[in-house]
Image 1: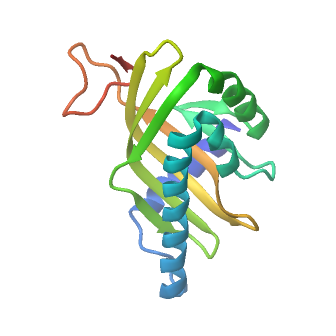
Image 2 (image 1 turned 90 degrees about the vertical axis):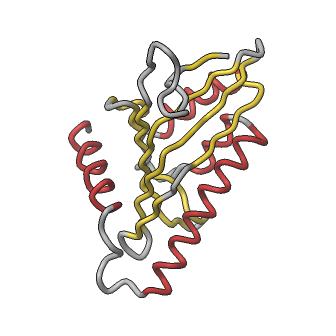
Length: 175
């Protein structure tokens, strides 16, 4: 499973530097980019309105979902992600995520690689604010329900002694 995650991540990263596949109609490539951008916009909006539980409806539910974090398999499947989100959701009163310099690369007629720096703010039930930041790669697939995420890999900016670098938040900068 780990080898599969590494291969998918490597393919996703390589795709971010490559043009759309030859033979993909330019209009279809634009439609894919628009659809995936709509997905990422919906994720940001839904998380700010509903909290962590909103993530779950943006993941594929066909048995192929998995997520890695900082080089480790975090969720081998949707059931593990659902369990973790259900435990985490009640601890958060508000959250927000922002994608910065979003890159979307159509890989086929129904698959796209997504790569972007992110900034995230979580406010827990005690009122404590946690700022997260780093880089995320995603594999988006078109399903009968629309665009969904099949794979994510989050890489976090490591904490530094004096706070975030270059205005970016630390992995767990608390306020």
